Length: 79
Image (cartoon, rainbow, N blue to C red; front, side, top):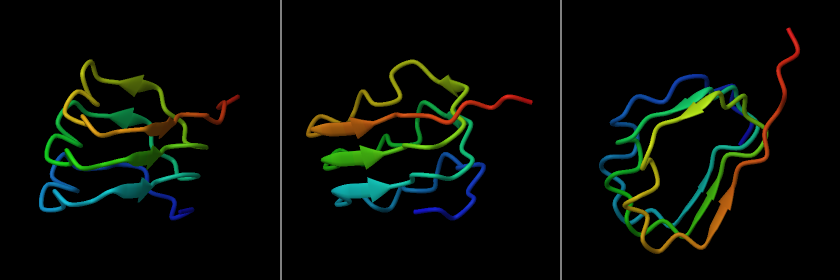
């Protein structure tokens, strides 16, 4: 992905209910909000590798009932 995305508004993927694969790897995402993937029930693979994740809200992936692969390898921020 590598787009330098830092923030993801909660409605970023709301109209993409048929989305199956989402690659958000190697950006600067720090927080995953609870309702970010709420409408993406068909998501099979989600790649968040290489971000600066500090916080993932509880139940953020709860509605992803078909999710088979979740990649969360992260970058350490040594500032």
